[in-house]
Image 1 (tube, rainbow over the protein chains, first blue to last red):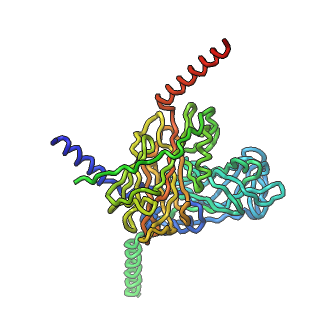
Image 2 (cartoon, helix red, strand yellow; image 1 turned 180 degrees about the vertical axis):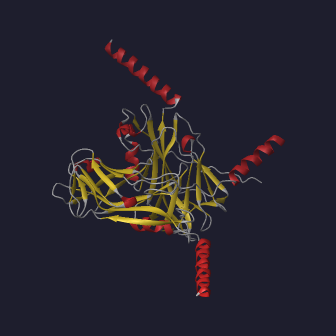
Image 3 (cartoon, rainbow over the protein chains, first blue to last red; image 1 turned 135 degrees about the vertical axis):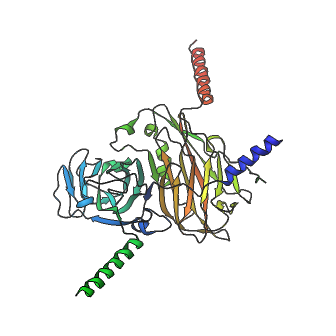
Length: 224
Length: 230
């Protein structure tokens, strides 16, 4: 009886200690506004204290087509390739020239961990047919971290994206793979959104800097 | 006193052996996929029908849980399901409620947590999970809102759920990782976060019982063929 009671208490405490939920390491998004607002949403708490998001938007304008296409700048530098065929920069997007080809986007800038590198990616991904018109299809967006999302893109420029919350992980590349009927069309993006985390000085440090500045000014006036 | 857990008598509505694995086609991907998120039930179901995404020799199966026509109950935890799809619902604070055809937290604000009792195994287990999620107001009406759905392995999706059948789900293709739980954190805390339907996916080596059944069926078919040939 006593053993039963102890076991019961243990079982109950296991239930009672049921956590506040699991911690998100890599978060998928299907809406651009949600993706853009995530770094400042206190409920999501994406980066924790001391970091803010910096964004880069790529419209693929002014790029030359080829087997490998590069763009971006600084932390957002990228190089895209297609598994077969080449890539075509159309001034309104970047697409594989061959139907069904997987497009890979590599991020080439050096980074330091933790919290370094490209931490957020997203895009208006879609298919185009041989006439260059947007068509519906299914895309598998795969991150280098192992997480991925499959979504049926029913209209032009529909959003899919990710943020990496785990400070020890970063996004070094992603792939766009057409699946199902999507394999009959060329996959690509009209717009690509990238995000990183930048350190922001703590309020205390800012106050200290301000105080030091004031003292320095006062000291200089006294000397004059 | 320990709260009494009440089974919900889940019906295995559509236990379907979806496929048997042939090739490990997924291994050709440069980016090794371990977790796949879905925003549509059709895509989630279709993924299970392509067992090439799982290790060779594995099978997949899906089943679902509807909270419709279930007896109303509010308590610290509620359990249901069978075998690999067994589940226990709880809240990060307060009770959980089974009412209005949904499983929900009993008040606005807390996170709804499902834990799965299947033991993680190299031979398979719960690898797929999904659901129709959203919010319930005090009158039992469905309300839309944003939810952060997080798996026990850290993969998550943030989505606005706008209708009773708004779906979000995952498959884990890594054979060494099974789903031991999910949490549904409300990002709009006006109403109680809820699930109206849950979808469970199994991937793994067929259980010995299933293998025995397959063996019996094969022996029976052979003896029948021999009898016909005679």
